[in-house]
Image (cartoon, rainbow, N blue to C red; front, side, top):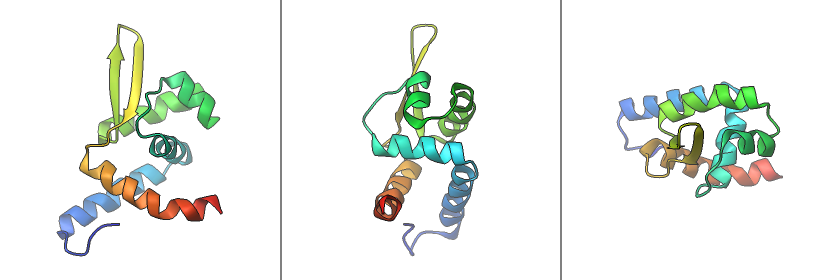
Length: 108
């Protein structure tokens, strides 16, 4: 969670981040998928298969996650794109901490 001694601006930034992520059920599912596997690389087809979401949905929700800095996109060749959780980003660290705290409640 956000420490109490953080500046109001940073707390508001985190709140906006959470609102943007959780405003879409599909985007939330994709973020959860990456948080569950923080060191794995995925292509769009694998994300679609493992989340049960349509390929077009995955394509639509990935770019905002990349733009937010939560997911890192790596281009391999001209057409292959791989994605991995951006574990060094401050926002991702906050989100991962939040997720680790709520995950037991999601599994029960």
